[in-house]
Every structure is written in structure tokens, then in C-alpha cells.
Image 1 (cartoon, rainbow, N blue to C red):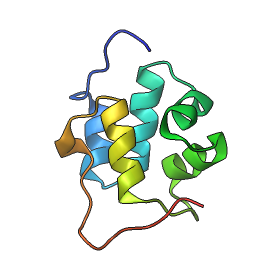
Image 2 (tube, rainbow, N blue to C red; image 1 turned 180 degrees about the vertical axis):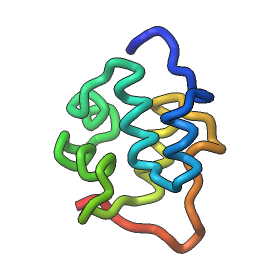
Image 3 (spheres, helix red, strand yellow; image 1 turned 30 degrees about the vertical axis):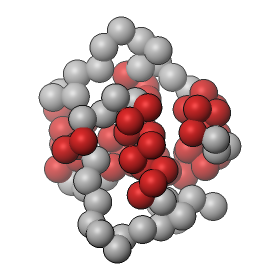
Image 4 (cartoon, helix red, strand yellow; image 1 turned 90 degrees about the vertical axis):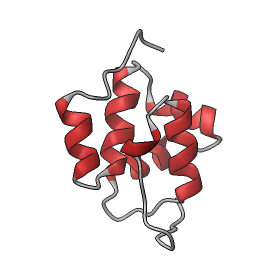
Length: 91
């Protein structure tokens, strides 16, 4: 992984405030200079599932996967927050 990711930086903070947690994951992953395939391997999922997690377009995601990705990417807990009951699954 890269040296350090500034989680207080504009793009990550802005994505978090907008509720775009997939974007937070993507920006952190890129900040750590990690590929989607490497993150997927660490999380036990495919590269395409990581892509869907980050894009949030038609895909859905599990809050467990989101939390695990956040821990792996060392994202502070306050930047990836979800509503209780908003659980979805990555396909």
C-alpha cells in the first residue's frame, strides 16, 4: 500500500458528507495505490464486485462488506456510515 491517505482531504470528506460511501472506498483505495483486484482479494470478492461497490450505480452492497473494506483501507469510522436496515448485498 502507499504511504499515507489524508482522510480529511476535500474529495474523501465531500464524498462521505454526500453519503457516497462507494466513492469514499474508491478514493481511499486509490490513495493507497491499491487495485480493485487487490482489494477484492483482501475482502474475498471479485474485482467486478469491488467495482460495483465503488460505483453504487445498479449494484448493491452489504454493510458488512463496506465496513470490512473501510477497516482494510484504514478509513476512520465516521467517514463510512450507513443507516440501520439499509443492508444490501454485493452480487
